[in-house]
Length: 117
Image 1 (cartoon, rainbow, N blue to C red):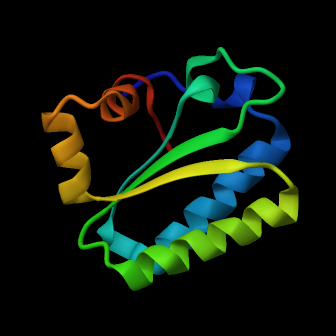
Image 2 (image 1 turned 45 degrees about the vertical axis):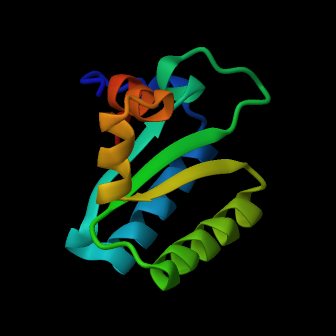
């Protein structure tokens, strides 16, 4: 994952606020079960345009269906509040490790371009 964060130069104040609120939700719901929360995609790489959304990946230890729906509902409320689309990839640790082992592009992009939040 990227060591130098372009967050201050690439993100709008609204986008920074959205990511802050999502992180607060994740910390509240997950605590130590939150293993990774990263920005990836065009905003992380710096090749975004006006139509670009916020791509975030969340990796959770022991993610169950109920918790997954709860997280997605909370993030949907934040999206609605700010009218900014967020594409969240919400995975269990096991799912993410499987994607990495199979060298799936999405996992490789997250590892290569991801900016820890």
